[in-house]
Each structure stands twice: as C-alpha cells, then as structure tokens.
Length: 184
Image (cartoon, rainbow, N blue to C red; front, top):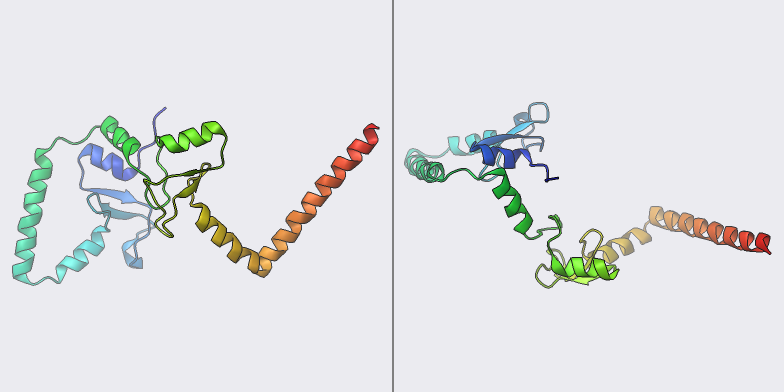
C-alpha cells in the first residue's frame, strides 16, 4: 500500500505548474473559500506572485520574464516524474523541521527494535536547539520536549493537570492493593 500523494506531488507528476491547496494565504482576499491556487515550484500563492510582480518596472520585468521563459523551456524538456519516482524520492528524503518521512533511518529502526525510547541521530540535529537525541515514537527532540514540559508545569493549567494525573495514579495503585487483598 503506497503513500497518498499530496496535491502538489500529483501536479508535479502530471506536469502542471499550479495546484489547489487548502493552506490559507497570508492575504485574506486571495483565499476563495479556503482554497488557494499555488505554484508548484515554490508553493507560493499565484495571486501574491502576480501582485508582487505587477509593480516591477519594465526593464526588470522583461529580464525576469525572459528568465522564467528559460526555466519553463528547461522544465518542459525534462520528462515529468512518475508517481513511483516521487514516492522513491520521498522515501530517500531526510526529515526536516520535525516532519517525518517513512522510516528509512537505520539508527531509529535499530532503537525501535531494541525497545529503546530514544536514539541519537547526529545526521539530523534539531533545528531549534541543535540537540541530536530524539524520541523513537515521533522523532521529536528530547530536550525541546523537556523544556516545553517544564514551561507547561509552571502554569496553573499545567499544575492542575499534574494533580489530576497524580490522583489517577494513586487511584490505580489503591485498586491494585485492593485486588491483592481480596485474593488472599
């Protein structure tokens, strides 16, 4: 069973220049019903692109259009990638900024097989803190999660949640003791 392709990946596979995205544009009047038309090359909203390039002076605009024409001619000379090519590229792509791709990371696989909760991935340090220790379950940086948890514990909501968690733990322990006493 293969991975489901995103609208952008489908557009690339079909050789189109644009695709429909549900990601809202920064300019509210560009998003019609929450759907924006975006460019395949740089994921930019087509309306924003037009607005920005509308104000260029004539000489620069002509130079830019010539450059774009050359890019399009070069892009059209290449055959569009097949769905299999896109899938294989996605499998071989490394993780960036917390997005996880299908597990081809041998270090992570070995840690999972060994039953460990974390692994040390030197090839992909955290973009936030630079740490290399990551959780096996979700690939999140261990240090960043600890810092976030410390911040949450200091808030009133975090303290209340901690008290509830401790109460549930105590209730479970009391149930276990009662079951043990009933068995005697």
